[in-house]
Length: 203
Image (cartoon, rainbow, N blue to C red; front, side):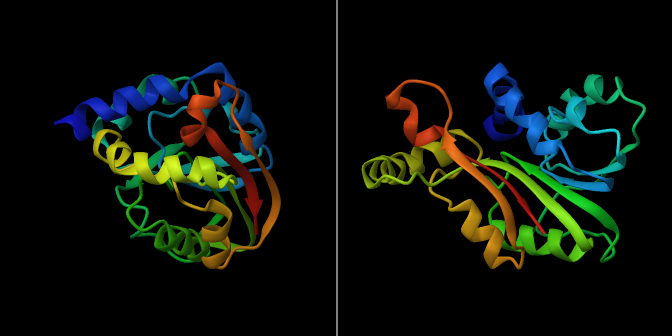
């Protein structure tokens, strides 16, 4: 009940802040054509899709999250189709999409490497992956706290991990990172185990 009914609503509240919204626009910039979005969630990226996007294939496991997204989907004329529940198993043909987008989802997918490999299969040669994620901090002192807090985080936040090295995962899945920005989100130092973020583009 907690993971299925409560976590999607809390995630929507947490991830629609102004600070994160300001990162979504540059993350979505450059998306073109048919876009695969893994972890569509409550549709917080919809307002930031650039005009070059022609359609979105949404992969979203949560019925509650998909329901919350209805009002955001209704505000756009862009075709958005929910086409699966599991980013690790995409029932989509290879080379069928022009771009891929994933935001704050690689932390909760049980095997993010497999999901990234699936995205690599589905996106055509020359297509790009755009990602905005949180994960492993650069300082060992913060990483120690991430390791201590991760079991609790996974229990209360739908399986969310704090220690994943997102650029390393993207590279291991066969993508080549072309742009990378990484920094802490604004906030108090005590929040650092949760706020180290990555914004990247890979091809």
